[in-house]
Image (cartoon, rainbow, N blue to C red; front, side, top):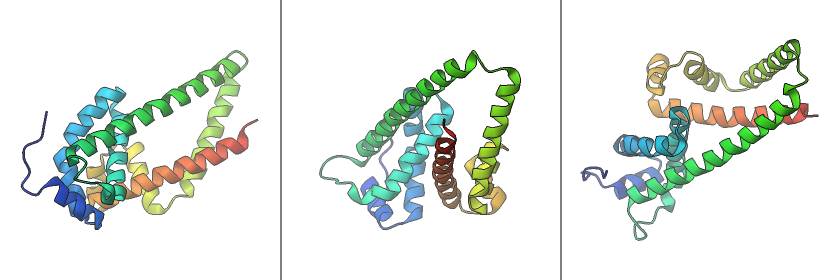
Length: 191
């Protein structure tokens, strides 16, 4: 399934993105999001993971557009390769998390009573709430609207009267910071 021939070439868009043209990124995203999203869903078997990885792919395009070399291949092929690589990385990451969770369940499952599990969940909620409090107001608001109110990024942009690219950037940087904070806090609580 190949896209229709574009009027502005993909290479031109990538050159503009390398110069930090947000509109060029939006155009490239609109042009390839459905194809890449379909690929990611097939690899990951999860809509949520595919959405997250698609965002990572376009964040990488934003950061690395200058690395694209048109002599080595087509832009479409480069995007497919980025998406496939990020999806495989995510599968590895999910497999690692799953193994860790299963080992924790094995360890705690037999000895943890219901009150103990409730206490663990309460502590986890406090850790997450504390980490969210350390994000900037803009990041926290965007993530809250997405994860607690179920809004799409487009709906969040409309609600906050912000450009879609700004919302995406805030969400991505907020998720990165949140992951770092949670990782630090969970490691400090490990026994």
